[in-house]
Image 1 (cartoon, one colour):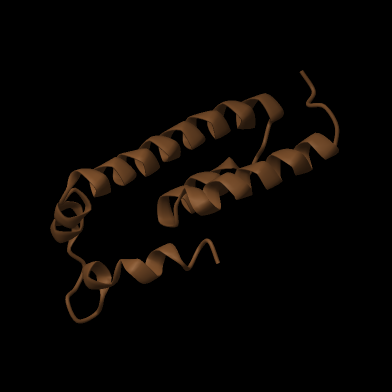
Image 2: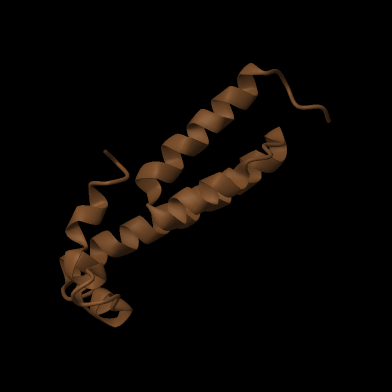
Length: 99
């Protein structure tokens, strides 16, 4: 659900009829202050998630941290965060990392 729902709203920017228009996407994304607020909120959340997951992945020696990056960049924070938390918990259940 979290992976498909955000993509249902991006229709005119990536439809086969109109082609992929990054310029139109950014223009409409920052069309007013409210949409700019939400866009920046999501961007900041993604940056913080990626930085935190990078630090935790190094600390816990997660070998699949590229999946978190790919999930966040391709779908968004709605996939990246739960995926990171799942991988982190799975690693913590296996025992402490060897220092």
